Image (tube, rainbow, N blue to C red):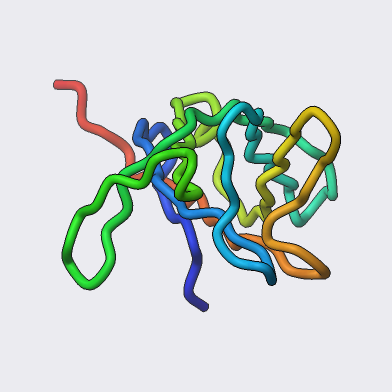
Length: 123
């Protein structure tokens, strides 16, 4: 299976995304975006990541910056969100002054995998 996001336990990194729905790219200006992760095994919500508006996205090997007005958003994964190995599903929750939108829409989710890390030699 391929995953939208993959890390090993303890990894710290950022993921840039372009958020869109059936009508096209979302203008995220003035909105709040949160990436919600649900543990597939327990159906619990262990993590909610507050996202930064704007993001760098690599497409066909080219890294491009997308502003909030062009749907760009960055999720910052800390060692907390990557602490537990396992499979997660996720969605971005976009909150504006008059609406809340879940991306991806419908019965679709991001697939997120946190792989078990190999032990590190300390001596």
